[in-house]
Length: 171
Image (cartoon, rainbow, N blue to C red; front, side, top):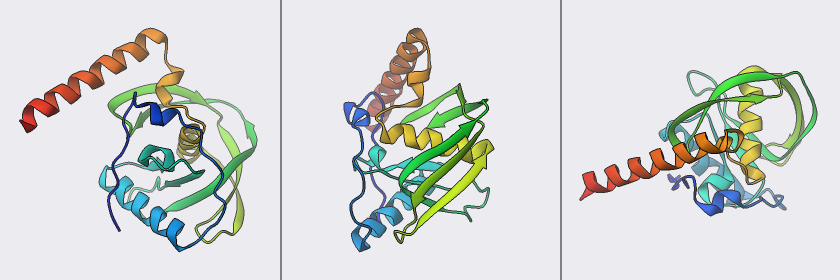
């Protein structure tokens, strides 16, 4: 397993729309394992393949406190949704930034698991938010897209400042 570099906003590669996974094989399972290692190390609760510069419809997540419920969604699609909820979201591609985002309260998702077997899940709360957030990445969307233009510009400036400070510390 290997940790993968996470692309950060506003990198244009985050805007790439992911293509469906054609084949679930050992290479894909290796990528899945690397994505889990990357996500847990970050630390995060979800990671889309787009965020590690692999533009395939794949996401991993684990919203458990003790990292005991890893979930894999290959070619996910939302079949049904209802209600609305607002959660404060963060993102590994937008480090240190958090904002309230409104999403569906309950969703039913169909996907393939790490072995290519189809499954459906109906869920709500944090898991539903996380799935929707990661699926946005697969569509080339980042959670800051839900913010006003002014707030989005402030996020860009704050991230640029963080990068400059990190570069100065490294020098």
